[in-house]
Amino acid sequence: MKSETDQFWNHRAKTEQEIAKVNIADTVQRDHELQFILKNLHPSMRMIEIGCGNGYVSQQLREKVASLDSFDYAENMVERARKAYGETNNRFFHDSVLAPKNAGKDYDTGLCVRVLINLRDLEEQKLAVRNMANMLRPGGRLILIEGFKDGFETLSAARRAIGMPELAPAKINFYSYVRELMPEMLEHFVIEQTWHTGLFDFLTRVVYPQLAGADNAHEPGAFHQQIEPIVRANTLPDLAIYARLHGFALVRK
Image (cartoon, rainbow, N blue to C red; front, side, top):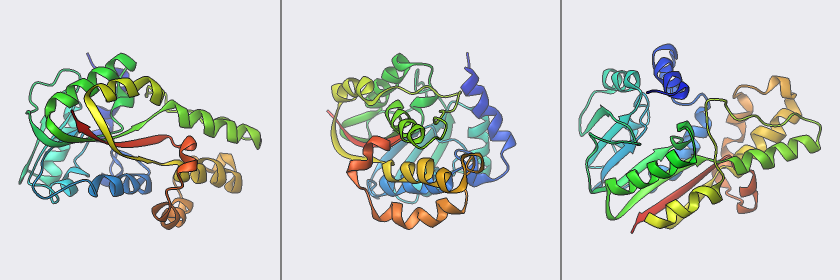
């Protein structure tokens, strides 16, 4: 049965008119994620995308790899992706990361971005990691970008210290700690690269609302565009504690 979160995304596929914002309203954040993703792709790769949404990213991925299979648990997302972008060296299909039936095996690389937070609990997240590992060949790579509770708590502490309300994660999402999911990741993968949104999150969740006022900082604005060159040019690993999102390039054992 579909959860409230599953139903939300199935509904959003039909209600959000801006095609670039169906999967995420903050397009600057999405483009920041794509920096990390695209540098890990190669034209010879056979790739699977777990949680393709409306296909906005899929149509960029298929230009970078030999073939692309993309699936989502929201049927309406899959339908919208097919209608918007068609299928060339790629296919869109319905499937579940918790019980995959239509995904293939032995892919060179997999991509999973902000999908685990849409699952019900930590046990489902661990199961998803195991299932994604089984989709890849030995030595294949999983590019995983996921939201975790750690960054929200650190950002909230920084906001409290200057008199702002705590940062509230979306109610439809479940966030685990990095340390809780890490053992499952290390059971199946070797970590090759890491990435995070610490600088972006500190600027947009602490600095921007302090300058603009917390009541005026609910939606992405011009500030996000203005800081994009700063975010692109810097990683500043000491700000990783503020990251809502952590990315991993994982090699299948």
